[in-house]
Amino acid sequence: MDLVEHVSHYIQMMSLHAHNDTLMCKVFPSSLGPTALRWFNGLRKGLIRSFAKLIQEFGVRFITSSRVPQPVDALLSMQMESGETLRNYTSRYWELCNEIGGGNEKIAANTFRLGLPEDSEFRESLTRRPPEDMRQLMRRIEEYKRLEDDRL
Image 1 (cartoon, rainbow, N blue to C red):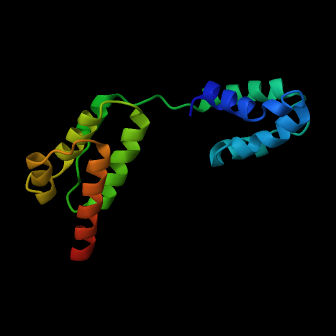
Image 2: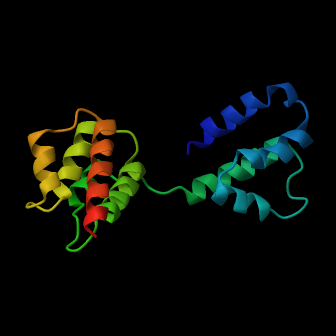
Image 3: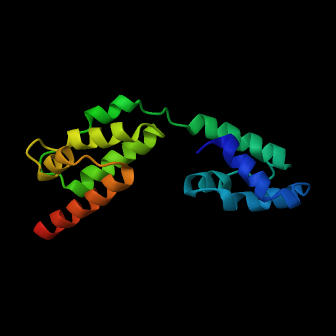
């Protein structure tokens, strides 16, 4: 989540009420995800006296809890573990891929394929017919997950 983008979007959505600090503060939690909402609910009563103060506290919290993004080459170390299901490998892979953020889809698709066991039918299929984009890769992953589920 980008702090500046989030706050800007919120202010834009509330533009008709931007002059009402109390309302801006009261509605702000509805724009937050679960983790940020827990932070908000834990704020000491009386700490926030204006929307500007709320945004300042939110910014401090955001900066101190932000994770360092993973480098793209972290995907190269992803390997499907022996006995691991495609479903679990895919979940781990997308979690890391999302931490890296925007990037080259071809790299993401290729590193996914390289993390599969060399004797995997799915790896062979992705080598013979590489996906054209991430949507196609995800569709094919879903197909193979269903096949794997049927075998179990």
